[in-house]
Structure formats: C-alpha cells, structure tokens
Image 1 (cartoon, rainbow, N blue to C red):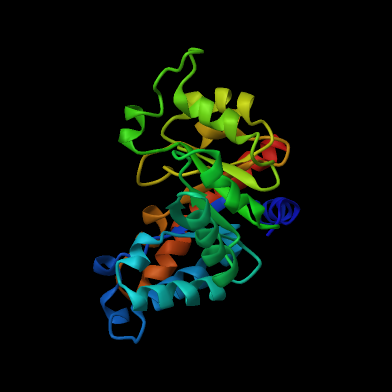
Image 2: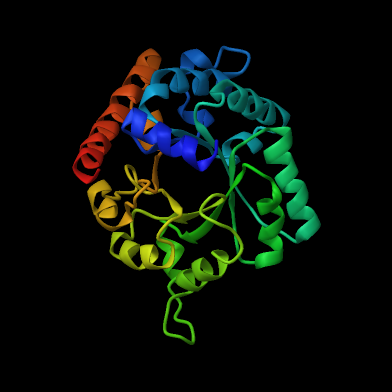
Length: 271
C-alpha cells in the first residue's frame, strides 16, 4: 500500500488506527486452543471484527517466532488473510549489516509480501539502505519509543544540544523520503511531537503506546497531525484482549470502535 492509498483509506474509514496483532498463547481463548492453528484462528477473528475500523495491522514477530515453524506458518497465513486493503506492518525490528539487511528485506517484502517493516537504526545508514531499495515498501525507523527505557539513550544530548532521537531522524530523512520512510514515535512522549514535526513535517509517524501504555490520543494529535493526517496510532493489547471467552472478537470490536470514534471526531475538527 503506497502513501496515496494509505491516505485515501484513512479518509474513507475516518480512522488512523493501526491494530497490533500480539497473539500471546497464554491469552488466546481456551476454545481456540482446540483448533489446528490457534494463533491464526485468533488473528482471523480479530481481523474479521475490525477490518472497517482500522487502516493497518501490525503483527509482532516475537509472538510468532517463539512458536517455531508453526508460528511462521501462522504469520504467513495471517498476512495473506489481511489482504491488500490494509497496510501490513511486520513488527520485527530488524537491522544488520548490508547483506543481512538485504535478506531480511527480501524475506518480509517479497517472501511474505508485507508492506512495511520496523527497523532499528543503531548500525547506521548502510544497515537501513537495503530496506529502502524495494519499490512500494516502507521502512519504519525506531526514533522515540514508548517504553520507559527510551530515556536511557534516546534523550542523550548531542554536541549540538539536541537529543539523540532528533539526530537519528534528521540523518534518516537523507536516506528515505515521505513516500517510503516512517518513524516510530511513542505516544508516551506527547510533549516532543512538536520538535518531531519540525524535523519530519511530511513523514508518517507510527505511534505506539495508546491504550495499555497510557498514551493520550488527543495530546499526540495536537502537534502530530499533518496535511495527510500523517499518523498511524497503534493499539494492541487494549483491543485484542479486551474480552475473553467466545465473545473475544466482539469485545475487540467494541474497544476498536471507541478509539476509531475518537479519531473520527479529531479528523472532523482538523480537516
């Protein structure tokens, strides 16, 4: 899904919701554990219940990789089931030297046909560039993450007085464009969205941390929105595990609908 299609989907569905698929086996409803592929059946039910409420799905690879071969099979089936009407983000946080990065990119962009991949920039430009060489695909670079440990390094002051995450973003904008590069910027840091937009006014931001981590949607939208909306706000646990038992998908839809309604109201006021 390219940028124009993504923006069109946001405007049509009145939503910039990205739904994280974190199918933790210990939380999958008991009745699904009897099926041949509990992880896929769980994901399928969540997707069926939320297709009209979100514009992106973000499977977290850790929850698939931990299961070995069956987990990779469930991942492949999940990606295929989502289809091409939503942005598909593989949350794998890859990043390595050139040849390895190229094969990671090939795996997720060609073998599994994902639209986007989260990338760790620590090893520098030559580790990121191979991912940017696949037409129509997105790199989503970690910039300012939502976890408490983000303060350990990301706010470290550089020679010019700016924090490290700003240096990362400035440098990365010379590698990619708003058509193929996004940034992860956590909802738990709303005060920094103004400076983030000064560095990357046109890029999309993938914003985790709304929901279970306590991020505030209106606070990030105050400075995060741009002319093309420019935000993909992710919620995972707060939606997919909103309910247990056989009604889990219905409860997930209810939770997603609350967030989508708030997004629709924000878009109405902003556009």
